[in-house]
Image (cartoon, rainbow, N blue to C red):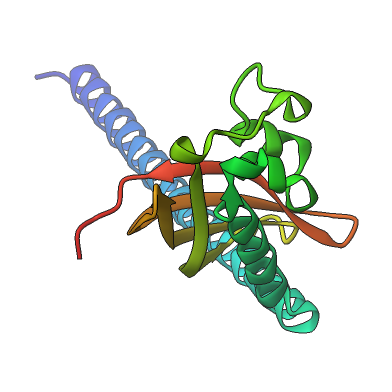
Length: 201
């Protein structure tokens, strides 16, 4: 092997080692950068999650404050009971129906949700004595579900106990409903009434 070949081989080796070192250093820098970016993404994701949790807690705290200051639950309960008492207390012999007595306790939407289609309160005639139904509200169990996102709305699950008298025979019954209530100008009104299946106790 002559001197020129030896020198050429050394130069090639030096260049190869230099390139390998350069490549390794660049790889290490890129790897470190990727790790930093990954850590920052993780931190940002955790921060966003924490911010979301704090916003939720803040919203719940504000709602509870509103609830405590305005006695909302009591007002909602009173509104629901007034609606149910009116709906379940009527005498068809007097030209009454449940839906004819709820006007003061429901929104227009709530009124229409229980009024039979095509019925007109001014056209309802008293029933004959042997066909008369007398309904009486007895009691109710209410379960209020507050809506955190909107303090002017609330849901009530109600189990209503009532009696029905037909031809002198009285029987007791129970029905379950979901009531959607809204606050309109400071007054709670039923905006929707939905019957639910009553589970056996």
